[in-house]
Image (cartoon, rainbow, N blue to C red; front, side, top):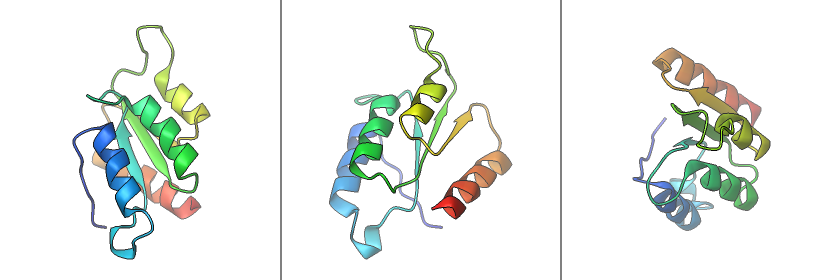
Length: 105
């Protein structure tokens, strides 16, 4: 499966806004960290699920709790993330999660 990496949440939103709907640039799934520069992953998940509700989103974090002691992985599940991964995780867990999410959509 080909993949595209972007440097932050703002760049991800721009890429998806430009490419969704174009067959050669269609995105099958988004894997995002929750802690990023420019645009945090919680806001990104909320925005992606609002704009592209059918697009599967997998969120990951090594800091599951924010400064407010909110479990951010639980929060993004409430916002529509299809799956979450808590760091550290192995390649096998990532592969299983991505395969599971893709088979559901």
